[in-house]
Image (cartoon, rainbow, N blue to C red; front, side, top):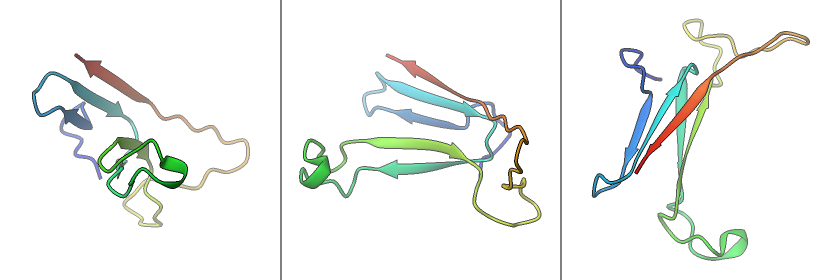
Length: 88
């Protein structure tokens, strides 16, 4: 779950501090996927271990009463905003 004390929900920064990715979102959580399991084989033959990372903003799949509802009924509108800022 995200700490809502800040507009920025997540930041990825290179070790040399030359590149930075900031993410802002109205979604309550972010899932982080890493390429740690890739080994230049199969469908990902062009990706090696630690070859990438993905940040997916979403609503957690839970029926917890303290979280926003994840049920979307037919014709019900859903809005979510995610913005990415890449600095070089």
